[in-house]
Image (cartoon, rainbow, N blue to C red; front, side, top):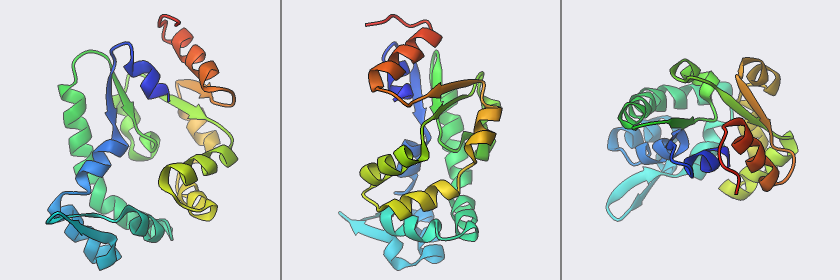
Length: 180
């Protein structure tokens, strides 16, 4: 939501999740995921291979070792592509990366922004966004940095505990953007 708000006045957005989805169609990444997580972690559509995100998530978030294995496959290509997109984006850029601190990418940014809300809200949002059950959503959250650590490291913090309109007013005020 914060990225969308900043994008409207002309900021450029580099979305790490979007880059990840694009990389899930790259042949060598698909082959590595298939070897590590099984044949059914890959779908074939229109003559192309692509990651079966639901199966991969179930297996990757099953253990810290599996998360590390997935990161070893994805992180080098993801980092290269994110750096390329950041370098080629003119003007002001927002890097939207849920794992900004875990990846060490905060050093690429002029300021780091953390948006927090209650964990129960995050679980519901993941369930709705990804079509998974609450336990699968909580498994994903267990592999992320704890809120207290993210808040300690953040330059700016937005508390998304109210309406979308309230969050938008906060963001526009902090970034000195015109109100609607």
